[in-house]
Length: 256
Ligand SMILES: Cc1cc2nc3c(=O)[nH]c(=O)nc-3n(C[C@H](O)[C@H](O)[C@H](O)COP(=O)(O)O)c2cc1C
Image 1 (cartoon, rainbow, N blue to C red):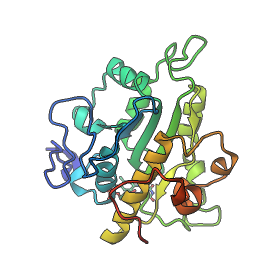
Image 2 (spheres, helix red, strand yellow):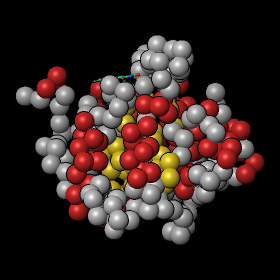
Image 3 (cartoon, rainbow, N blue to C red):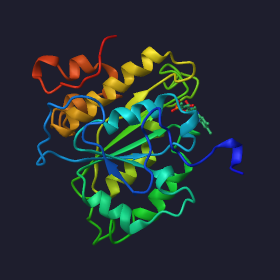
Image 4 (spheres, rainbow, N blue to C red):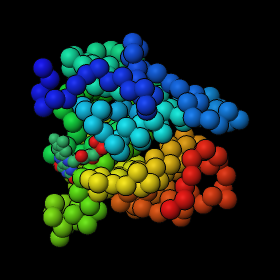
C-alpha cells in the first residue's frame, strides 16, 4: 500500500500523460498544430518531471501535457520511469548527453524538490562525469527550473511568510548546476496553486509552452542581461517575448 494513498501506475487517459514502457518519450505533436516543423539543429530540451502523486495534480499535470506537445522536447516522468526509486545512472546520463537544455519540472515540496529528484541528483551527477577535474559531460548545457508553489508570490519575499525568495530556495540546485558547468535561466514559477481556477491553469500551461519554445528557438538566452535580472521568466512574458517576433505559433490561447 503506497504511503498517503499516492498510487502508481501513472496511466492517465484524460491528460494523455502516460509512458507505459519506455524510459522517456518524445511526442512531436500531441496537440494539434501539424503545420509546425522542428529544426533538428535547434537545442533539444529534456524535461525531468517529478511529481509523486500525478493523479492528484491539477497544475503540473496540465503543464506537463503542454511540454509534451512541444517539438524538440522530451518529457521524462521520473516517478513513472522509476516507481521503485531505483534510478539507472547510465540511462539518465545518456539522456542528458542527448539534450542541450535540462528542465527540472516539479512542485515545490518543503522548499525543495520531491524526493526522487533529489535521489536523481545523488545517483546521476557522478564525480568524474558531471563534476571534478575530469567531469565535464554537462559543461555548456543550460538548466531551467519549472516549479509550482502552494504559496503566493508575496509569501516568497524577504518580508513575506516564507522569508526567502524562490531564487534563494533554489540556491542548492543552482549551485549544483554551476558546479557541473551548467548555466541556469531564471525559473518559470507558478505561484498560488491552491484552488487555482482552471482558466488560470490553462494560462500558465500556455505560458510554459511559450517559454519552452522560446528557449528551444534561442529567443530566451541565458547570456542576456535582461533575462538574468528576472526573478522568474514568466514575470511578464509579453515584454520578454514580443509576439511580433514570431515563432509563437502554439495552438493554445495566451489570453489573460
Ligand atoms: C509534501 C508537500 C510539501 C509541500 N511543500 C510546499 C512548500 O514548501 N512551499 C509551497 O509553497 N508549497 C508546498 N506544497 C504545495 C505544493 O507545492 C502544491 O500542492 C503544488 O505546487 C500543486 O501542484 P499540483 O497541482 O501539480 O499538485 C507542498 C505540498 C506537499 C504535498
